[in-house]
Structures are given as structure tokens and as C-alpha cells.
Picture 1 (tube, rainbow, N blue to C red):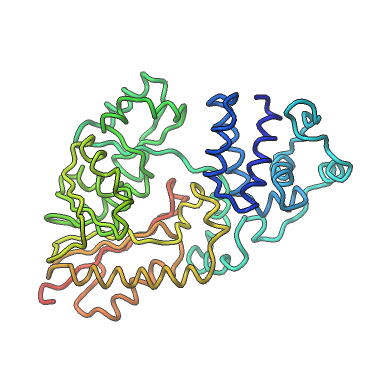
Picture 2 (picture 1 turned 60 degrees about the vertical axis):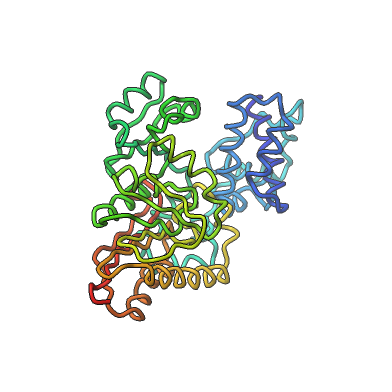
Amino acid sequence: MTPAAREAAAIELLDRWLGGHPVEQALTLWARASRFAGSGDREAVRDLVFQAVRRRRSAAALGGGETGRALVLGLAREAGIRPEAWTGVGHAPAELSEAEARLLDAPLPVLARPVALDCPDWLLDHFEAALQGQTDVILSRMRDRAPVFLRVNTARTSRDAVVSELTALGIETRPHPLAPTALEITANPRRLRNSDALAEGRVEMQDAASQAIALDFAAHARGPVLDYCAGGGGKALALAAEGFSVSAHDIDPRRMADLPARAKRAGAAIQVLSGPPTGTWSAIFADAPCSGSGSWRRAPEAKWAFTPARLAELTAIQDTILRQCADLTAPGGLLGYATCSMLREENEDRVKAFLENQPGWRCILERRLSPLDGGDGFYLAVLRKSAGS
């Protein structure tokens, strides 16, 4: 596919998304119907689509409207590129209209702050409360693609050994300071999918901040760990690699469907619970359902679907999870509360409300990470229950 043909495909896919189709679904259906598109074409179209979704507001403002064509044109205008190959010939987009040509010739306008930051209007005040003086620089960072990270399974190998193994495959990596297990892929990340390192459990895909949060909790925990909101099991695997015996639970067991195979591949001691956990535990980790605002670079359409009503719903769920975990925590035990959110309402405010309503608990560690640290936005509070509670 030519670059113009890729742009035409992206325009079509963005129109489907704007019409209500989930981005991943639209991309999957397009790939199945476009056998002529090679892997490089599919990845290039995917990258263009996701960049347009991340920058929906600014691209629409610069491109002249809320259509797939306008979004792609807006990205080109911001980059200072004039799409000369839009000829309407073959698979290229139709020629520029007179209005579009005038738009490209005009100086870039000064965009309103939430538009320039690609932030929904109602959310800007929430980010200001949480990020304060760093709001603009963090939200600007969120407008671009996230780095690709690996977690080295140190129960099986070392970070240096993985670096050498992947280098032989042409996959370039570098250690990341957020976690001693973290590698950032700097070149040829798509070769990883066919690597023995991934297939044999020596590495897992996991954001560096997510690794850091798991290791922070592990540094304070003792004994068996209950991963109360295990989901796909990334943090359960990280904790197991640190030598913990981990039991995984999720309110929707289907989310854990792949975890037994991943645990076996990694040589991890993880028991997937078939029902609600019972008894008490010396250490519980709860990566609670949240807005995901810290990872919106990876799932950008969630930003545009998020609403005040959903935020209120999530904070109620988070409060419930904290109460449930408190009941399951043994006297003297630890509860780690984590989210991949950057909003105070889901983080500090929830912990404050918990401590006000649960006597006998104290916070022994609180950590907030943002994309300025290199990975996703994450929050962790490690809470200890008094021995007499």
C-alpha cells in the first residue's frame, strides 16, 4: 500500500469509529477484508488511526470537522505536511477541496487549552486537582503513543540475558529506571510476538510503572498473596516471580481465562480461585477497576467515552472493593490499593475515605507515577491493619 492508500484506509476506519464502532473491532474487520495489506501496512494504518483517536479534539479543530478525513488532515496540518498524494487516483483519498487547501495554507490557530491538550472539557479541572503544575506537560505527553515495555521474569532468567537474546533477533531494548525488571523496546517491537523469550515465559508485556507498583507492594508483603482484582494476571505473575505464592480472584473469572497457561509458561505459583476468596490473608493486592486515565495512550477511545456518571460509579465500586478486602485482611496484614488512574477521586480520596471509616488502619506507603516517569500513570497505597483489629 502507498502512504496515501494507508491514509485512505485510516479515514475509512475513523469514520466507522466516529459512527459508533469500537476501534479494535473496526481494525480487525478491516484487516480480515484487506488481504492485500501486508503486516507493515496494517501496523501503519493502526498507528495512524490510534494517533487520530488520541488527538481527536485538536485534529478535528485543525482539520475542519469531526470526520475521518478531517482528523487525518488535521494530523497532517499539525505536522506541517501537505498531502500532495491525495489525488483520488487508485486507492488515494480524493483531492483536496478548495476549502481544505485554504485551511492548509492558513497559519495554525491558537487552540483553546482543553482542545490543544486533547482533554474533554469536564475532565480538565479533575486533572488540575491531581496533577497541578504538571497538568499541561503530562496531558501533552498523553497525546503520543506509549512506549513498549517488557517485564523480565527474573525467576527464569536475568535482564542482561534477555537483552542479549533479543538483540540477536534485532529487537533493541534498554533497561528502564522505574523497575529492575523493566526493559523498554526501542526498535522492532513487533518481532517479539514470534520470539522464544515470550513463548517460553522469560518475558511478559507489562508497563514499567505497573511493574514498579507490584515491586513496591512486594517489598512490604509477607506470606501468601491474594490478588483480588487479577484481570489478565500481569501483577499476579510479577508477584509470583518475586517468590510469592499467589491466589488470583476476579469478579469476572473470564478475565483470568489465559492466566493458568501464562503461569505455567512462566513457572509461576498461581492458584486461580473458582469462587470468592474466604478466610483471611496476610497480604492482599487490589488493582481496582478504574477510569484507566493513566493508560489512555494505549486505549485512547476510553478517554472520549468517559463521563461524570461513570466516575461516580467507579468510585463507589472502589470503596466497595476496599471494604471487602479489609474484611479479608488478617490482623497485622497488608492491603495494597492500586489504580492506573491519575484522578484524585479514584486514588487519594478513596484511601482517605477508607481510613476515616475503617479504624485500626494506617497508610505506610503512597506512590503516584505519571507518564513523566516514563510509563503509564499509576497510584499505589499500601495500608496496614493493626494487629488488634
